[in-house]
Length: 103
Image (cartoon, rainbow, N blue to C red; front, side):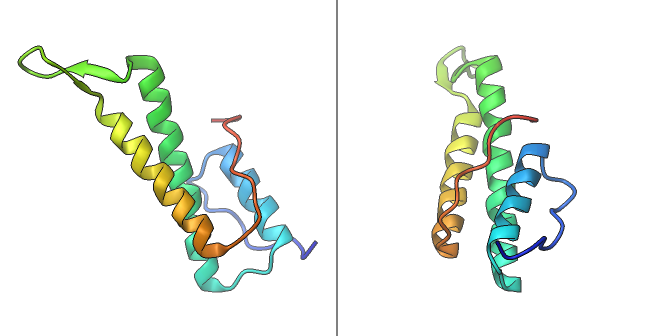
C-alpha cells in the first residue's frame, strides 16, 4: 500500500469517492494520471446517473410523432461507460470499478 493519496473531487458520488480513495492509496499516481482517474470517476458517475434514468423511465421513449425511439440516456450511459473503460486502459491499473452503492 502506497499511502493516503490526494483527496477525491467533491462532486463525485460517495461510492466513487470511496473507489478513488482505494485507488490512490494503492497506486502512486502522477499528476496526469490523477486527471485521467478523475475523468474515469466522472464517467462512472455519469453512466450510473443515466442507468438510474433508464431504470425509471425505460430504454425506449416516444418522439414528438409518437414513434418509439431509444431513450437519450442509453447513449449517455454507453458513452460514459466507454470513457470510463478507456481511462482505465490509459492508466493500466488493475482496479475494480466503483460500486453503485451510496449513489
